Image (cartoon, rainbow, N blue to C red; front, side, top):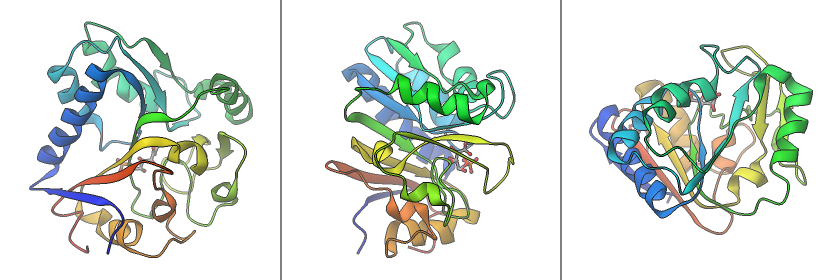
Length: 227
Ligand code: 6PG
């Protein structure tokens, strides 16, 4: 049986709405939210901005970033800016973006510095790759074993093939709530392995669990097909 609380929505739009409601709730409560990249959360960010336009009580962080400028189409920050940040009336108390434009080594060093002394997050939103990766921690990469550091650099294990900056597993698991958002039939195998399989370096998602809080997943029916 899965150790993750799973909610299955009818389709991707319904899954996005559920995640948006959780994000808006956290925005109202304040605290810290770590945003996921990739394309799946875009709609959730748009709805979250509609549900709550005052995010002045929260600080935003990023799970991972591609080493591109913030206005590049591949930028995870750029996606969140367009879908969420520009729509807010009350901007977040702080926007801690990863500086992909600095390149891998300097970008990692800068974000490690940014995270110095930061404790448990309130909410970490996590996507899942079709290969089972989370953040920019790819299957069987040595980055999965890094402890004692908050941020690592990595080559990409999947498209887009640009260098990455990523939180480590211990850092992203240090949260009250870890929330997966996964949609689409191409993710069904990975979802089965990540949420209902034995912990394995072959499926980084299976290693991502809140250290002392709750781990939840909001899936659409297609992504949940193999559970
Ligand atoms: C990234 C990510 C990555 C992403 C998954 C899912 O920068 O690529 O943060 O972990 O969440 O690859 O991406 P999609 O939502 O685009 O499928």
